[in-house]
Length: 465
Image 1 (tube, rainbow, N blue to C red):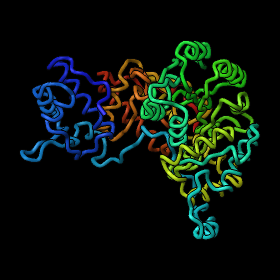
Image 2 (spheres, rainbow, N blue to C red):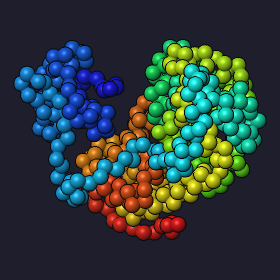
Image 3 (cartoon, rainbow, N blue to C red):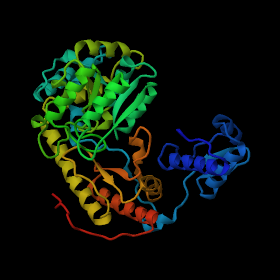
Image 4 (tube, helix red, strand yellow):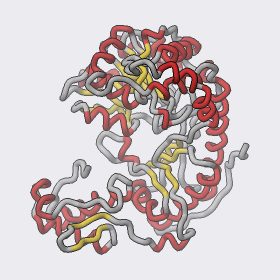
């Protein structure tokens, strides 16, 4: 969990260790009340002196982040912060680290609607490695409607898009293989690649669009076994690759013969248009090499925990065989619910897009008022803004924001080698009032970090729909 922390001498090393524990705690990776390793044990594991660990523990005790009791060891805690005096004593925590909205109202209705179909399934064994037929048929129909003719045999239902990526990595890479990724990119995808003992190889995103020439150079020089790309409302930048760019990218992949996972988790969230009128799916330009993964988590609800893979029948067969080492299929009831939602998907998807477009406007306006020196491009779709800060203070803001009840993911998580400290990803998935309150708290935190309160402004506000 401490990542690439290294001992840099007693003084720097103890401060670095304390900072690593502090970030894990404030980022929610170490829950309050977690028992920490004994000083001697941790020192041996890290290959440092016990004095260094003891010094780090002393710093954290002074900050009120750990408490120790003789005979019981040390455990993590969260202190009462003076910053809380600026807000109600028991303010509700606001999560800007997770870019996922709550469930659409129609999800609950779908649960009631499929009870009869579920009763019919109870007499069967329920182990469906490829997914239930009706859901595979409807997902295939959706791909076809978007311009990519697809049969149910080209669909594998998974436990989310993240699970889908893990399956592809297991089936198509070996330990030590390289995987080309954009930088920045989806942080959990990087974790999946590393968990497969593969090495992510980044191609930096330029100021605008994609560096397709850079992709070609990396494919030629690093010879990655696979690539992972998000060409629809890229997470976290929000960019979308146009049809001409997709055609060029497909030609590059074809020349290198590189299998590529294209993550379409956000494709249905075209907030300024109709997904059916958008650029064709990447697989339209390269059927054999492109493996498309998608999910209902952003469009409908993450709690369904369902996603899918769209690929050639041969690849789907390989993935289904490899899957047996992970699980034996996705939950049947949730699949029936999603199949019902995809019987006529557009009405609910239009509702989701309208909701997120309104939230995007609220967040843009709140940032203009409370954080006027933060800059960003307003994306045409997706779920977040990729903000540029006036100074490299992103990680300090992410850590300090915990004290005012706001969770923000440090931008370093979206990078292969860390950094990006002038950036923050801010999702607009919370209710409008919560978004404004979260930005207000972040502005207070940023002022504390920079030592300057800044100025409030209203130029360039977008009218709230």
